[in-house]
Amino acid sequence: MTAAARSGAELPHRGLQSVLVANRGEIALRVVRACRELGIRAVAVYSDADASAAHVRMADDAVHLGKSAASKSYLNEDAVLEAARSAGVDAIHPGYGFLSERPGFAAAVEEAGLVFVGPPSSVIATMGDKAAARAVARSAGVPVVPGSDEVSSVDEAVAAAEQVGYPVLVKASAGGGGRGIRPAGSADELRTVVAEAQREAASAFGSDKVYLERALQGPKHVEVQVLADTHGSVVHCYERECSLQRRRQKILEEAPAPGLSASLREGLCSAAVDLSREVGYVGAGTVEFLVEGSGDAAEFFFIEMNTRIQVEHPITEWVTGLDLVAEQLRIASGDPLSVAQDDIACRGASIEFRVNAEDPDQDFLPSPGTVDALELPGGPGVRVDTALMAGDAVPPFYDSLVAKLSVWAPTREQALARGRRALAEYRVDGLPTTIGLHRRLLDEPAVVDGGYDITTLETWLAGRSP
Amino acid sequence: MGSHTITSRTPGVFYHRPSPDADPYVTEGASVSEGDTVGLVEVMKTFHEVKADAAGTVSRFLVENEDEVTIGQELVELET
Image 1 (cartoon, chains in turn cyan, brown):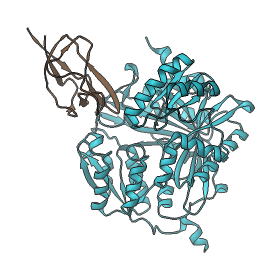
Image 2 (tube, rainbow over the protein chains, first blue to last red):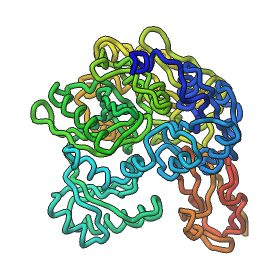
Image 3 (tube, helix red, strand yellow):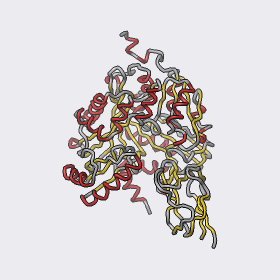
Image 4 (tube, helix red, strand yellow):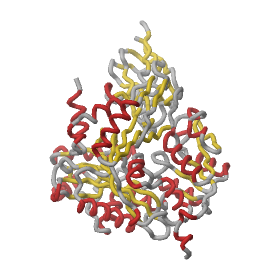
């Protein structure tokens, strides 16, 4: 192998000529931009509601999928595959959400002779099954939250809980995104909760399999970005702290994780690489952990792997200087990663603020509508990922995320100051958003000192309620 | 006897039933009490139950299952 062949950065793009971007909103635009920089033709897809959306306008070409409801458009596997055929693309990039973690869809893409920009469908299936994912972690020597195997009856659950220890969480094997998770503090509570969880899991996920996990006390959610190519190279891109969550939905993320000891960071990142190797991972992925305790007494436990690009990937791009979406496309082309582990450093501090079309003063009621006027923040160290322009409508059919503001600075203190400055510049007229919530959060001592955990935001919100 | 219409608090997609395989919340001719759930509106991946804000008998649905609805749109007509 010549030096040029080893270093993908020096090669023109041979593998992929054109990619169908099977998503909408800011992530579709993000993928379109990466394609265009790499000289790949980007073909957008759209629903009735998105006919004039930014991701359509900025793509090289666009294919109509169907009506506005997600089930009739972006979640319609046949329509997306047909769009790929009619556009003559080589690959499909699923973004996040929608079809990104459906093994059946990835398999159909593979069977159609196209490249799925992500891991093989078998890996998506394994990591999408919580029990199978825990088994992979165990065989990779990665600690998992103390828990049970799948249980199929209330009596089995009560017996298993004796081993795991209360309080426990009841989780659906086929669940995800925090859905289908219920706490139980005692055997009596567990009897009720397991029956409910089985019913809900059967209707929501088509499988009534559930398992138990010990409920950790005040844990932090810390995740590690990994990249794996088809040549056997697996690297980590350090961690993200994502504990500020409401109803298990992240709202603010930062990199690196404040207060993490060097040895814990090393342990987390090595564990993420080991687990990725164990499952034969390919592409960009995120290994999520809970961290309980602090300082030298801190322990980490694997919870799940997201087999796709993540909403909060920009903060990792800020601190590493990598273009994660370009790396995804490079990997999908069969090229080696552009970097080796030793080339990846974590510099400075970055924070992302999720701007959702929701009203924090009305229990986060989703607030679709039309943006009358818009002023975006700018200047040094500020990035806005959004597909929302002034005059655009935010349709009621899709996720409420409309923009991501991320900032970078040499130190965390400077990043917080830059975040406050950028949030003060940000103005959206016409619909309520979470921008004001972020301004208030940056004045909260628990956020400023970085000591927050996964319970902090909900506790704080409950304290503000009338 | 008068009539009353139940309207949508949010824009979104209207459903007659809690899940695709379930029975409808109510059918035409059913009697409902104030606070009973008569439908579901999906907005931005969250589901909001539509509650009857008066007691009465369901005389007709003004939108089909899976229809797109706007804020304030009339959904269900009651005979009160």
